[in-house]
Length: 66
Image 1 (cartoon, one colour):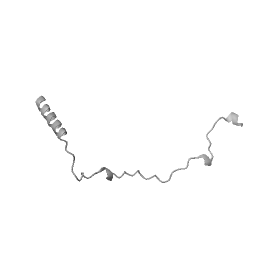
Image 2 (cartoon, rainbow, N blue to C red):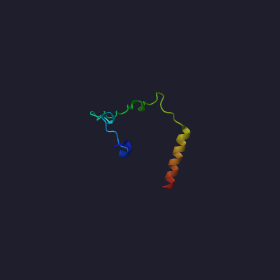
Image 3 (tube, helix red, strand yellow):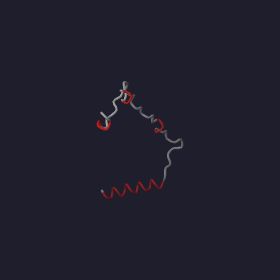
Image 4 (cartoon, rainbow, N blue to C red):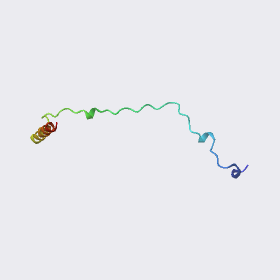
């Protein structure tokens, strides 16, 4: 038999086979999220009088619509 008569085939020799995996890989580890938790600032949070006025006005206008 010539190669032309046989056609294309998958190599079946041992050197071309994918080796079987005997041990499963470990599961992925969770990332450490310690850096996302912050302490409050030492001097406290900034209080904006303009923001307080805006929020009070918005709350009053919502009550007017209710």
